[in-house]
Length: 324
Ligand SMILES: Cc1ncc(COP(=O)(O)O)c(C=O)c1O
Image (cartoon, rainbow, N blue to C red):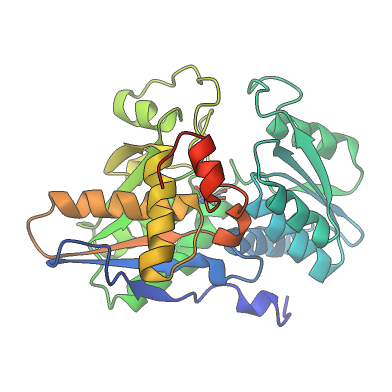
């Protein structure tokens, strides 16, 4: 579909870190995904999936788009639905920032807030809630971002080629934390298909099951929600996540993610979310292990504005036991 706002999705800037990378033999580039029109990387997958759903007749005129989302996918769905004239119903856990909830309502979407503490098999878990709404609602289409192969495909077809082109094929390492895994799986696969020596590194918050699954091959019991960073880490294995393209994983703390996000804003003028902080933290940790020159690329998935009442608020940081 040709629409001037949807046309602005993708082709985001790739900028080199100037100050906070202490390793002069390594270049670290960050792809500023908050330049996408709804403010995050999720515009890419949502537009790709909706285009396909319309083409294949899964989404018809007057239909309802339903999705479970930690916020950014919801904003992308809500914006896309508003432009194309569909109703959107979005479920999310209650740990998601109020700014993100309100952003969806601003686009006219209906928001269903579910308890973060609900177990993955509970009907109140936000993923199960979206599934039951999709079953009950006539003419509904669920994006199913966690298990839909069109999710990594969107990155394989857009973000991956952009990174390859923007680095003139010089990228040696790609770093991205994951939730659905679409970003790391799609970009990671594309880059390895261009040059099989490229390494993909995935940071994961302490408390997420991905790290242990990657290291042992066994899916651990999910822990009680133990981390505050929004949008990465998981309590279940998403089918969009392809661990075969991941070469190494690092575990990070909320302090690592929030501290680096704040540093990025203060020293580089890059105002991103906590997952951007985690990605840059991991890129610098990776750089510390590399003896040879390298070109590390990572993503800043979303905009810092969404976290003004959280880690960009000094009092909030101190109240949560973090340092400034
Ligand atoms: C802020 C943020 N960062 C990173 C991600 C992870 O992306 P992916 O789902 O492609 O693994 C998400 C996903 O929701 C997100 O909202």
